[in-house]
Amino acid sequence: MIKKVLALRENPVFNYVMLSFLAVSVGLVSLLLGATGIEVALFRLYISTPSVLLLNLLPPIALIFLFYFISGRAWIAYTFPSLFIIALSIVEFYKFQMRGDPFQASDFSYIRETGNILSQYSPQMHWKIYFAIAIFIIGVLFSIIFLKRIHIPVRIRIIAGVAIIALSALLYTYAYTSEDLYAKTKVSIPGTEWSSARKFVASGFMYPFIHSIKDAVSSTPEWYDENEARIAVGQYSDADIPDGLKVNIISIMLEAYSDLSVFGALNFREDVYGPLHRLQEEAVSGKIVTNVFGGGTIDTERLFLTGNTRLTPYGKATNSYVYYLRSQGYFTEGLHAGDVWFYDRRPVNAALGFDRYYFIEDFESGSRKDSFFFPAIMDLYMSRDFDKPYFGFHLSYQNHGAYEHWRTSEPYYIDRADMSEESFFILNNYLDGICDTTLRIEGFINELREEADPVVVVIFGDHMPWLGNDSSVYAQLGINIDRNTAEGFYNYYSTPYLIWANDAAKQVLGNEFSEDGGDFSPCFLMGEVFRLCAWEGEGYMQALSELKATVDIINPAIGLFRENGELKSELTPEIRAELYMKVRLIEHYRLNNFFY
Image (cartoon, rainbow, N blue to C red; front, side, top):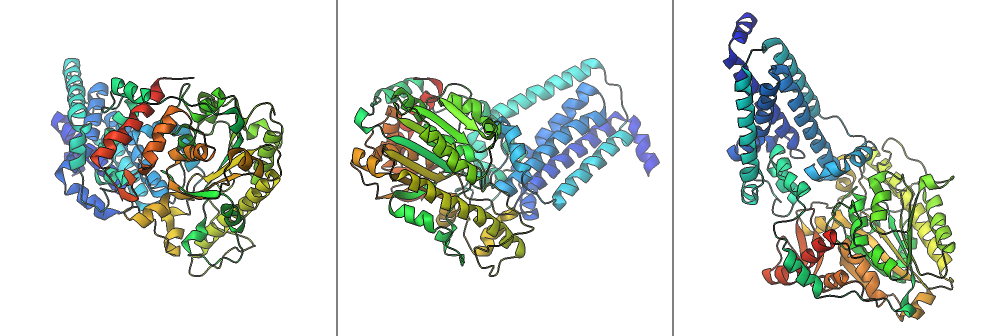
């Protein structure tokens, strides 16, 4: 049998047939890895849906044959494209497993940071990974042993290569970027109308990944019209903050900070959240409904600082509330209890307008713990220039996942009940950090109570904690985080916030800061602070305020809005045209036209 196969090596057609077979096998492996969460059942749907199957198999076929005609060697043609495609597919598999969202082309913007984040988790090896590696190795050996190098005239190679590139360009332009085709080309799984992540998975991997390229490289959306944007911008004018109302603002975003007591699923041995609840009674409080889960801190962070409805690159000076406050005479600074390189915060924060920003490298005794973080914030505030109003934005690191699952120690904050040992360890270790953080929040606030200068403090969590592979802790507690339901959507994305003012600020602003703040997206949080301070703010914030009265949740992660209290995937046409698209036009205009 082997001799017969080896004899076929002399026939060029054999190479083409075998390369096609190998390319299809790589495409199928990619689909198998892309079938994350629903396992083999979803893979079967892929291969039984011709349009999904074809659009996912064409990229590896085209890439392998392009390399074949460029190199003239079958093993090169198979090895490098296959390695690239399988590597992308493995990243997709783990990213979806751990974060609940797919790997898209835009993720390459933060590839170093993503790698550093994922390195902190302990992804479990899965049979799919072993299978993909085995198929790759078998393919490499087969291409080396059985596919002989056959001379192909240079002219033929050039013509074939150009033809593949031209055909690929046509397919990309008219098929892979088509929104109509993308909307139709999917397998039938629940929740695709609620979740863009599920829609991605329902279309395979290579096809939706290539479809996402246009969003990563396009700077001007199809819906954007420069003249309409100028008209929308012209409807508002920035309002100055009256000198008598310029109170100091300290904003603090806490890593993975969540109030798990609201679910009623835990039997607490200690009142972990007691200090938080006491502060909520004397502050404006509610929940921000984020766009991220278990990670993606910068989404919440930068939407708060800019008011943007979605995360965008910040590679140059960018309009932000930080710049607005600077224009009003504020000194702006901040501290992150993490590394300077993390998410490129040093250049990005400079682009957003901070006068000064600190990281743990800037302190001899810098630490990721809140025992360093909160005193350092207080030191910065107390050493400020007292002749200028102050704005600080600070990010903690304590409580960052992953949480140890192999051991825990006393105190035990909860009863184990029916949880597995591993889940109990994860949860108790998470609560150990949260208990410390909550006590330090209360202590920090208490230090500011008698402060003579008026100060407003804004504290909020960036996202819910990641509590183990496949969110097993949530499942064992009976906490619904199924984003295909309204309850699960809120549970998955909601984190607490509070806006507190000392007596001096209450007196200056004529506001007791005691109302129910409600729930809304991070892009509205700074506007809520301004409202409570009786500041109109810049024009864009005024447009956002008008939108928030009707639409207070905008979740691009799964494409949901809350309009007049109702979650929906599409806004009513009037609201979309008159309010939402006006905000989007101004938002995009602000990204490309620097005002300060």
